Amino acid sequence: QVQLVESGGGLVQAGDSLRLSCVASGGTSRTLFMAWFRQAPGNEREFLACISSGGRTTYVEDFVKDRFTISRDNDNNAVYLQMNDLKPNDTAVYYCAASRVPRFPYIQTSSYDYWGQGTQVSVSS
Picture (cartoon, rainbow, N blue to C red):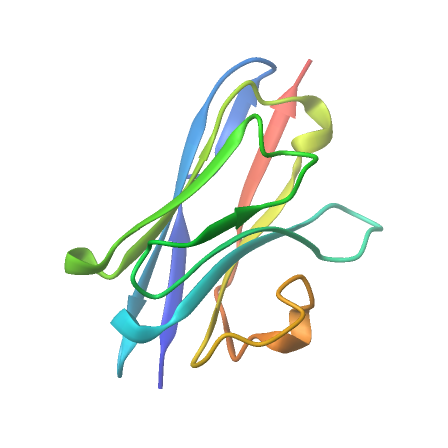
């Protein structure tokens, strides 16, 4: 059974940067297709970015692609979300997700098999 643990969230000011980490354990974590989502209070969980198992292919949603970058380090079973120039409307719980195989559509929560517990990011103005 794969387990995902996120870290790196916190309270920051607008314009600051954060790097979120997600460490996978158990089973074939190196072969997982990975993604980041976020959920703000009262909103649905929204897709941000995904990365292939080998890390060669990434996709970041247009509304954050100029500020967010996804990467992974398979030697450490980790996936990262680098977030720059954070804004108050980036405030949300950020979740790491994984699937045993890539499934379309990548942006849909039901395409993923495993989820972390989430890490809170709060951005003050």
